[in-house]
Length: 386
Image 1 (tube, rainbow, N blue to C red):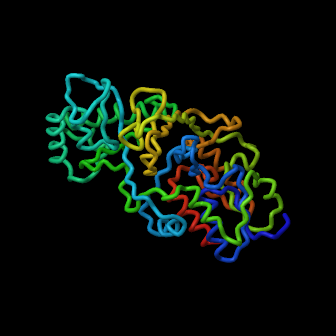
Image 2: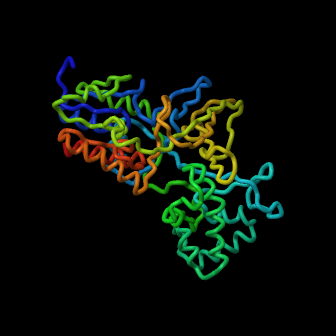
Image 3: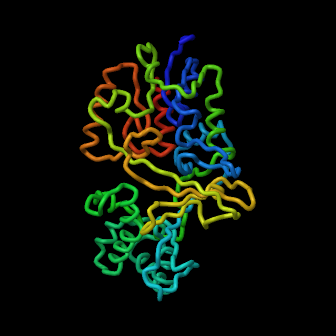
């Protein structure tokens, strides 16, 4: 290295970017090595050939209850007010049922998480209203109850709602997302699937929700724009880590860092099919889940997330989930968390702990699932500790 750095950070996503900025403001000289040709990690966004601002690695919707995280990120972006909504799109079970809302081509839609409006669309306006009142008699209004709670209710009609939600919202979608059979799906996960006892159709209920007004990439560019930060794109951090005397923060795959010496950690990856459509809008919500049929799990329409005004054209993205193989071009998105894989990760974690100036941070490095705000919070805490 041509100059001395106090800190070497592998990765320029949320984990690396937040740490870099905090440490730089404390007077540390920080080198950020990013393997990709851009900053922002998986939150990276850019305009496609049609001029639509897309999320290259899948939709990222910011939401948090952590004011400290929100205030920190707000230093680098203004926000577009946005309340994310998700709709389930599935074939109608019974064509004789008249849904409360519009249907097309023999299919119908309802909000996810399943709520009182979902009941009316699934069972018809009259029957859905009756079942909704029965739920409200049994549980507090505005609350959420789980499938497990509903199944334990002595009223068979309430228990049947749990079975409906399991079948139409959860099980087939989860099979596609994780490549599992119903028998392999963790019962504890199933039990936590919520039914919302209100007509609140927002996917998230956090206090702070929104989209960076100019996009995530612009936010990261401002975050990393500091005289004490040097960013090197298209750079693998691992060779730089050899004999680096200062603090190292690694946000990549833990198994790759140690040469897969104990074997690769399993992940799920995603394939994205982007399509340009010659119309103002393609669907009724930013995300539409195909919970029962279709090979893809969901379709995202980016203009509905960003509020971009671009008449006559829109871009959608179909999302397919499959096993990660480690082939070039694949991205590991989701750790497959179970006791066996956790035990394998612990071996890599033990090796990392033998290196006193090394810190593992983030989804890949810690082999966990984190939302963006949780990663930012962990990065703030680590940087302050350092």
